[in-house]
Image 1 (cartoon, rainbow, N blue to C red):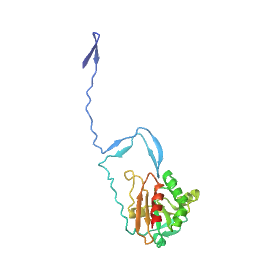
Image 2 (cartoon, rainbow, N blue to C red):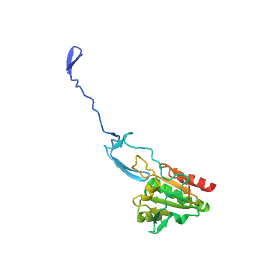
Image 3 (cartoon, one colour):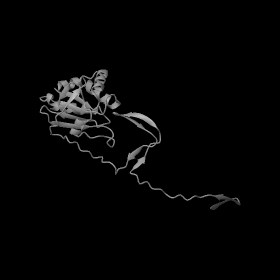
Image 4 (cartoon, rainbow, N blue to C red):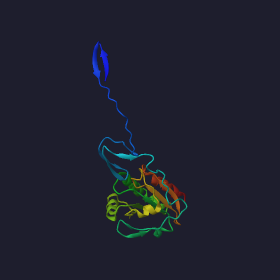
Length: 213
């Protein structure tokens, strides 16, 4: 107990002693408000107790299996109409294969509509456009119809092709990555472009390359 004296008036002041506490967990809480939002391909909901991994609990360096100069793994997936589509079907012409997180999310919708708006330019360059996500065929069909998408959307349920190609995830592995590959007429990768936050730039970068081939 200590005393505080003001004008000859002695008042007891309690000075509790606090022992610092340590937290052994490798996570820490960062948000204090409960809310829900859409974030470029994924619905995020979080509360006042959101834990984010510390820098020692995750690996931010993810190397894709498919690299420039390689022929990527073959695949056969169902399109928005339920028909089987194989990558080998497009050999002999350039192909733009873009992996995106999910239908009907803000960034993915912006990206799909940008490919739609530039589709004539891709056709002029002799290229095909293929979008791939883990959504099922009915979701793809509704997405393509709503936004009048003239190109192929493939359903990679279980994300097998995404894993085979080694598409890196974003946000500490919580968000499926947004990555675009440009294959030449021989099926060899000539460009790999990754940008989660500016989806329309995928169109700009791929067109630049296609127009130079």
